[in-house]
Image (cartoon, rainbow, N blue to C red; front, top):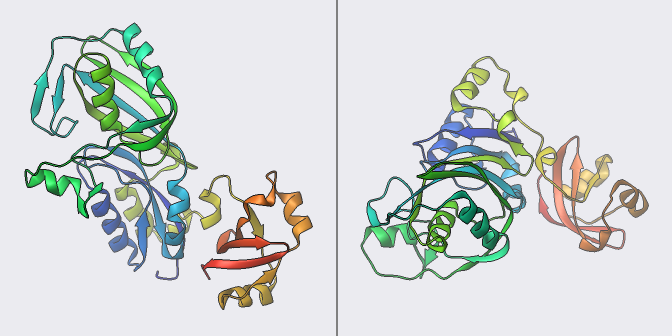
Length: 301
């Protein structure tokens, strides 16, 4: 199956790392090249886009897409991991009401600064933060620029509140729980976390590992492999049909593009210049458009 390329919309269950999940997919499909977009913590569940074959070169473009999560914060205690796995560090009897929560979440919309959790994969002086934490070393993580499109309460009771959020890359839900609780003059940590959407990958069309095994056994894999171009959101794309053009691209040569046709097929202006060339639903090259000349940066043929 090593000639396969495309995407699998995997639904990762709890208590398994993202790395173990894709390793299982790799073994099921018996393929060499595989990757995933957007790591999920072991306690988190939800959509995990899997790239197969040459589609792995497109992962950076998926990571730019907005992600949607549903999560629950338990009020009154902060843990060493900012989720229910860690040991309790601080406690408070102050439990926020719904009106207070709705007022404070406004502070977490738009472009904001956020400090990742100490138990995270962020690098500090060349080492992963979670490794330094395990070694009981004292270190500081600098705040990062992150983006939140939408944040809403979907359920609330005395001790915990559930939310839905739409956010950009590099955003940590655990950090939000920590920071929102502090703004509310209490403590808090995540008790459940589900990712329901990444760009065009959504929960409704995702597939469990066990179901993937059954599909492979029935030789119906084609039913769950999505073409490379189909899952990329908001891109500038042009279909290549000429075999000579495809051959030139395979050798990294520049080719001429019908700029008039490209402009007609796109709602966005061409001043971005980065475009994707596709053939029969699969991306064959990514590069820059200079006038009517396409210069390839990445080749996927």
